[in-house]
Length: 294
Ligand SMILES: NC(=O)c1ccc[n+]([C@@H]2O[C@H](COP(=O)([O-])OP(=O)(O)OC[C@H]3O[C@@H](n4cnc5c(N)ncnc54)[C@H](OP(=O)(O)O)[C@@H]3O)[C@@H](O)[C@H]2O)c1
Image (tube, rainbow, N blue to C red; front, side, top):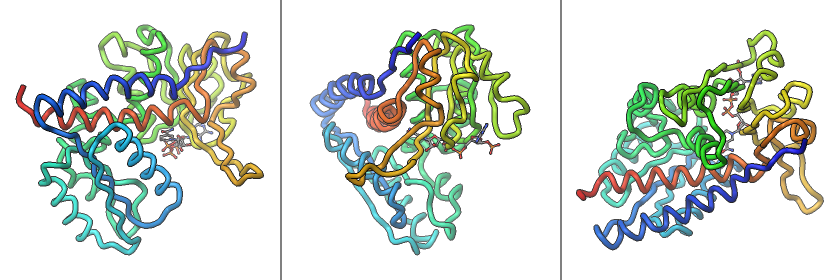
């Protein structure tokens, strides 16, 4: 068997088309242009790329984008003052602080300072708590993107054995929570694995749907999965450069061996990555919609 490729690039494109209509309607009916503020502290090269992609995506969709680049030595006081200003700015519906931030700044204090109504990353404890109990909230973009990939590819989660590898707050734990929700796009039996899991392959072999987010290439290889599994590879690992100087990216799953057994698999790049960005746009549009009275 050779797996069907679940293309995040294609699905993200569909969602962008849907968003364009919503944005147009918000504009026409209410005179509102959804706005996203992105805050980058310091010059981490990967973070610069991510912020640049988010800015570009805003521009392509016709969203208002406010980018704030701060020097690496910025104090916590200054960044908290900036968040306060953005919380009060009516043109800004969503605020994103690109992580990681420099060590002199307490990350939690910064994330908790963002108004939950503008927390389009879904990292504020109010949104995290609402997600856990199944209330409407901003869902973390990568986990939400994974859910959309499954739903729009026609993969049933209801009753499925879902195995998640990785327990980070931004990927593994939210994915676990979404898959557990008592609704048709959840209703899965979920196992969460991490570095202290005794026999990883025992769990991955049981998976109908396997979601891997470890940050290590080849965490899962072909001999660790069963025939017909659906695999979502979240990992982005830079393993070198092409002669032209472009980064060579691979996921956390050994694509070539796993695709021979899987029913469907996401590629890297072009899988989860494009979904994360488009779900951020979707949350920003939703944040803007929440401010208008229908
Ligand atoms: N495409 C996207 O949009 C997107 C978004 C976010 C992240 N990512 C990528 O996804 C990957 C994971 O990101 P993250 O932020 O979740 O990483 P993270 O915070 O470093 O967490 C990694 C998790 O994987 C677990 N782990 C590591 N090696 C393992 C192994 N061999 N067996 C079992 N568990 C293992 C760790 O276990 P312990 O808790 O026990 O240490 C930890 O829970 C990275 O490659 C990242 O670049 C991609």
